[in-house]
Image (cartoon, rainbow, N blue to C red):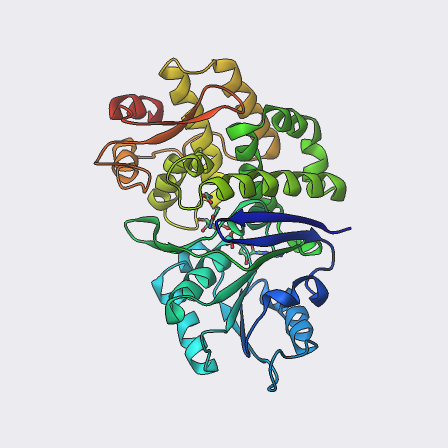
Length: 364
Ligand code: NAD
Ligand code: GLY
């Protein structure tokens, strides 16, 4: 069964298809590929497993024009340490070699790192060409592939270079999760928990009841969780594409998490792992500021622990260094800390001018 959701934006919309065997199901996504050039961008772990399926599917497509579709595959090194401008430049070079014109299309096949880099290159080439997301990690399926945030890291911070550039389609082939390492599955579950923390207390309770099924990769449980998260995110993005308000809520735990990822050294803590610690710190800060009950933090702590995610800052984390990195977060305004905190499970809020001393207290 394929579930199709939609991201509805001012003037246009695109589908999120979630199902099994979708890499080969050209009938599901072919209308999103226009023009005569297609570049598949993948990474060194994912390409050997799945790129061939996409290549064959594209080869079987009837071209829109008189000439056959020209398809190339670019394989990037895997991992967050390679999510940088050099990687984006490699994609641009590949587009140049392919002779990609303005109607060309980039197909991002992989996790959030691949999707963010490939999407960013697509945003830059000739000021913006089409791209499709084929997420292969749980994290990318529930979060990174939806919503059009693309970009790369800078030594000064996570995702500091980027562009809003929406995909023409998101195609989540659930079969690809079979090869995802356990640690990556757990990291993806952090973003699933985040969705519940922000705005769905009922889903949080469902996660508490189904965590074992999710960890055992039960198909029905995973399908449900992915669909709930995509529906939630699609709604937020539709209402606030450029993050002028509500969309910032999707960053619950991320100001702490991004700082932690950069401070630990990219790739040491996975993104989802850093977000798990970040959500707990945000919850603790909320309690410290009198906004939320400590019992909700305890429930979050218990759920993250059952998933097998880290629930404490790594030993010898430098609180001041972390705070300094948080000052460069994209959500801040006029030098003041702007954080996503909560009133309790399912009730996240944007807090302006958060006192740095209070933040430091929860980092110690
Ligand atoms: P990732 O892309 O690095 O993938 C994780 C690892 O799993 C990699 O080693 C990859 O090669 C491997 N892998 C991927 N799919 C596989 C599969 N099916 N089988 C076997 N191995 C597989 O990391 P991620 O967790 O998917 O994404 C994290 C990134 O996403 C971060 O850079 C984060 O900033 C970004 N992100 C972006 C958004 C957004 O809105 N754009 C949202 C959330 C996160
Ligand atoms: N992951 C945050 C966002 O897409 O806005």
